[in-house]
Image (cartoon, rainbow, N blue to C red; front, side):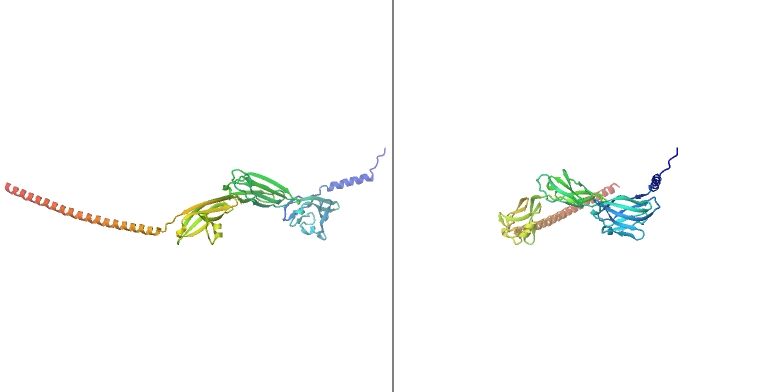
Length: 390
């Protein structure tokens, strides 16, 4: 039986398989790219494992239904942009096996798929897909939109917002509040960005006012967590302290101080009668009232402080004698008389002491002289007895 000879189609198929086997080692190396909006994005594309000639390099951008060529490179003419988008692209490859490009000053709409195509002779075109992700740094803000009032129950004491970030930011709080609660919400925008909002809730008390809390925001575009400090703003009604201080010459300053938030305004009255003044606005702002030292200064004075959350008042009673200067002179005279009397008594006592000392001295001398005479007499008598005995 005669053996059948292979047909032409068989040899063609065999040759094609051999050719495909020779080019299967050729590949295009790429890598997906993440970039922060506003920065430059480097899209890498390299052809490997072939010595065939590259005749053309084409870059495409994927849209919803098709690909748009935006840049082409040919060895004779170099890189050429094909549309407005291509004008933002810089070709930085060598035009042979390297087709890297830089997309400058990226914007959010640059995100998407890109195609890098090598046209190789004689083996044909080779391509790869690259995904570009554009990240957006959120705008961070901490505030107290509506300051809560003491006694109002659980309220939002601070709000932290990381607006229009991509991807969504993560928000946490660091505080020294005894009790607190946190509520987080996220809102996705049409352009793909997300706003994250975190509310710090607590029961407001007076001691919280001006207390510092910290909002901590984490996001892939931030090298380190963003920490924003915020001082709490708590509203409360006034409490009053009233005092007086003498301001020479001949005046007295009444001072009314209120601890209040928002700041209080002040008014002064005397025994339920408003005090006339030419500087009313200054009194309302500072709480200070200056009085002249006149005979009618005495009486009961009232200070009232007020803010939208309450009213507080304080009193001070003034009684200044009109003859207090005379009393001062009289007291000074009495003190001087007492001092003079003490000096006189001191000298009298000293003189008497000296006289007493002189009398005692004379008496001592007389006693001493008598003693000496007796001794001498006894000596003479003893001498006579000695002579007689001899």
